[in-house]
Length: 360
Image (cartoon, rainbow, N blue to C red; front, top):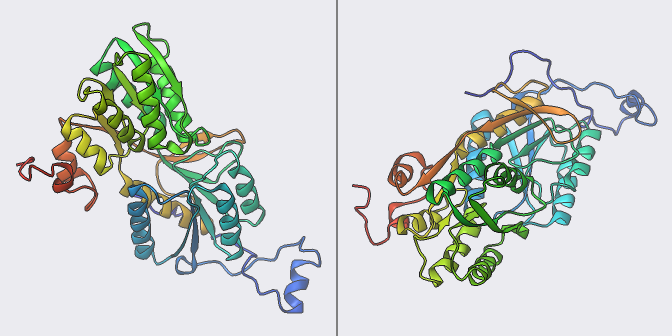
């Protein structure tokens, strides 16, 4: 499905020249102002750096494994750096990757607004940057691989309206520093914001997508509304688990809509139990493969060979590959767990611990 364009010359880089000899120094110019071409790079020589946000969610271990599998298939080297939600650590790790002469960097930014400076640093060293899953405002990236995050919000909002066409809604959005959260929120505003049958009593972002904060918010909203809340439109599964606890504490399980994102095992079990209404899934295997393929192509000076749309984060248009999203709910839960989810993502014993024959 993906690969490298048959057109385009191999990327030439000065970063791997040995600078120890007088001839090399002279070729570069005394001030480094006149770059000299190096030998063309082959696929087996490519090194990709990965500047990753966090390992906290289960999905990132799968992303890492699937990216590594694609890299092994192509014969390229990956260097992973995990920032554990620290913008300071990510900046240091990003610079460390550059010091290791990587040929391209795939990035999941901790602080998307601050990441544009890191992209500029990479470009100064002729290193292309691919954003994975998150926009970077003010940066003209070389490529982006992402699910259609706006469509995530559309799917969640429409599912809420199907569950409760009228009523009281609370919108528990993701991290304000993360453009995924903003893209999802834009869809909420479009689908729900002008609906006169909907009363929105809470509409706020949640730092670090924190489940405990989401639970506290849900408890406060329920108290303020005397438990008369029809829908919690929640931007991801981690926060949805917190909201579900708050709803269960009021004996409202199944009576209140709760959305999520990522189809994590805990949320799939909540859907099976009727506590969470739905979640949204994108094919991570496709997304991970596309990210590695795009990075290798750019490292070789080629155009990624996959369908793209042009996007603009404020510094000019660039190409992006978008992965489609789909809804997972009680009606298609068995199909998802047994057929659609990646191997090892969620077992029947996790989703239906008391009913091993749930999908027979």
